[in-house]
Amino acid sequence: MTTHFPDFAFLCASRVALMKQRRIPAIDRPENTLTQASLEEAYETPLRIVEAGLGIRVVVPRMN
Image (cartoon, rainbow, N blue to C red; front, side):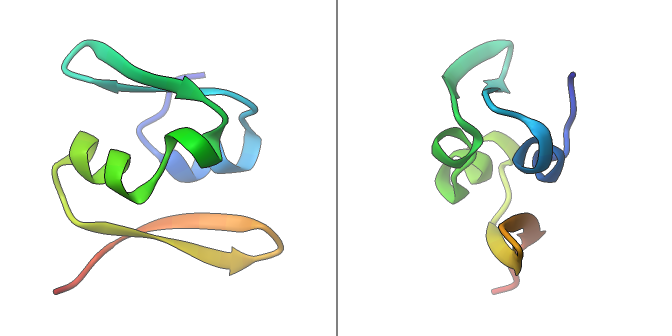
């Protein structure tokens, strides 16, 4: 599966590959690969990973 929504990867993937500029800098479990720092770098925007309960993680824009 390919997605631009990391929320989906948190929900259903056991391994993910993070891609940026046609390169794959990381492949591992979602919680190890899809960190706030790695996603901010990939999407070039400030964001936050929020625990929504029941083990669900959601990625939201960070307001300064």
